[in-house]
Length: 120
Image (cartoon, rainbow, N blue to C red; front, side):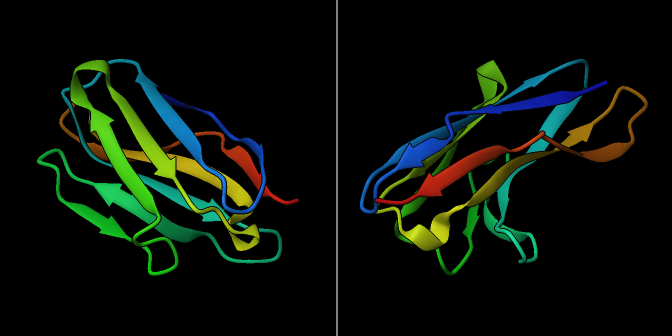
């Protein structure tokens, strides 16, 4: 079984910064793409950012230029640096990872989510 645990969420003022972390634990052959999604109340879950094992990145239009995704493959941890935060960034942020399991199947796992609130 693979678990993803997010941390780093909280309350921040507009214009501020937060750094989210996502720690993966369990047994696997490899972790492929890692990513972040978010869901605000009453809205659909949306892409924030993804990063492949090789470092290729993809960002949602609303966060491009303000957020940066990174990962430490040696520590099986992903990060999301969020700068210039806006009230509309308020949401629950979820970490995801596409994991090659020991039976060679590929499965996408999700974390439990961490709340980010941007408010003065």
